[in-house]
Image (cartoon, rainbow over all chains, first blue to last red; front, side, top):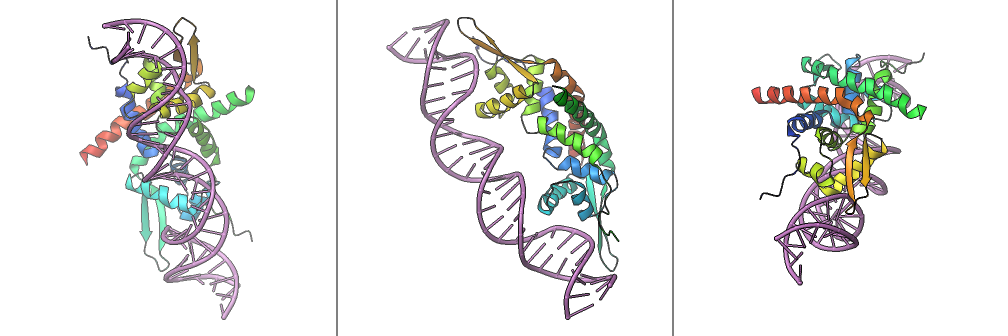
Length: 115
Length: 115
DNA sequence: AAATGTACTTTCCTTTTAGAAACTACTATA
DNA sequence: TATAGTAGTTTCTAAAAGGAAAGTACATTT
């Protein structure tokens, strides 16, 4: 008898969820996306809009988001070179995730306080 | 003049999202929740249903999920003591997040391959 | 000339995290 | 008696992450 593999497969769900987490996991990526989403475009603005985030963390996370084509870095070659960050159209596909997390977070806070 | 704070506030969204991430962030927490959700109840079954997860990682993540009351640990005192893990009712509130991540993950994989 | 703003990078250092492998303790089974 | 299953823990080590502070390079403003 093959006495192994008694568990139920859940890879149909686990694999795509992990694919998603590989892109948006971490403390800062979604906050950065949110901040850019509300209209912050400059490095310093984005960074200051998220309490506790250092420029080092910003630079690293932002690079990964640009690589994943969720945010684009735009260099405007005016005399003082201006750099702005914007949502790509692809970033819009994240709104259901952001909304679900936001809603859950609000309810979870209530849940924790009422206990 | 107050020449500071040129950024737009996004804390209304960032704070709850961070509250949510504090609970479900990490590589293994949602996979574990999914695995228990489909019916895996035993430590070894859950662990083996998620490729790459070591028992050490399992034990750590599972403890945190129990602390956050998303999963309960049930000790059945039969002659060989039996330990099972189950979803709490509260875990059900995560399904919108899991669904959103799963759907996005599926589409993202298509997106990556087509390029 | 000095100070300020912008967008980062670099350094230093400490704390976490991650993975492999072995180990424990108990029970049941061959 | 030896092996296997269950639910983890322990040890070791290497890699990664995290935070504070200062630095860079260039341009504008005062």
